[in-house]
Image (cartoon, rainbow, N blue to C red; front, side, top):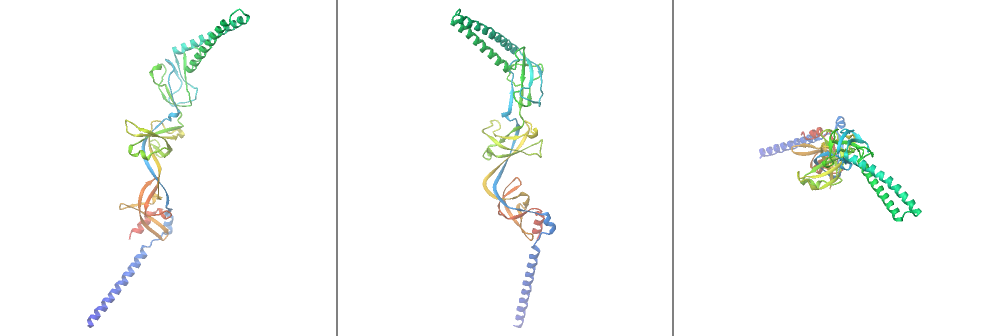
Length: 366
């Protein structure tokens, strides 16, 4: 019985010592797990606050730069003939009324001949009418003869006016056989299909020049059937090109086609963008990123704050220099440097958005 009491006493003492040791270990571990930002670390980290906003969505499309068709004029010949001189070259800037080319044309010669003949008819018929009027007033001629003379004069004037209009369309000066082709608008010669000495025919159906105002251009982008619902007029678009990789051009979708391209099975959307410095050239390939806001609202944090490890996403929450903890988050999507979060942090909570990886390692190393 004595031995039994000793054994019980020894066991109780051992258990008490073990419990005391365990308590000390827990206290030590608790002290070690508490991490504070040092003065140097406070200068390395950046503290951000979670906000809330409507979720943005991005869609990447391929496209091509083209002319603003509202500011493009194709120039066709109004008369057949031989080109005598071409005054401008491809890429030249021209003003409205500037001479682009001069050609010799039998049609123009005929028009000028008709103009001269009709002008002479006007002069002759006018004199005849004046004489008939005097004779009528003197009672020598009848009223009928005077009215006929007046009618002939009016016909001559009408014919002369018609020939003048035809001559002005051709750009004729009223004499000779020269056909002068002039620029109808200000802009750049973006297409030229005429050379000195070539013979032109009006029934060829081909234009001689194309003039465009390149102050703004269109981007025609391709949208596949699966993405049609993600694109609407008014959505913002960011355009990049191979020529200017670091430059982003901003615009908005101003037109969405109602039909699919029968060859490529894509829907075309049009983005109009200012062409400052004339950097964008027609036929350049472009990447178009369309951005729109969904009606669903979510918590937003800087994408730079997110840590990815073990197939999961984490952040470091900040409640104070000595009150930091790691939180697992559930991500909805990442758009334009913003990460939309479903859970793990709430609006108004603070987190580290720079230098957080160092703190994360300190907090998780134990």
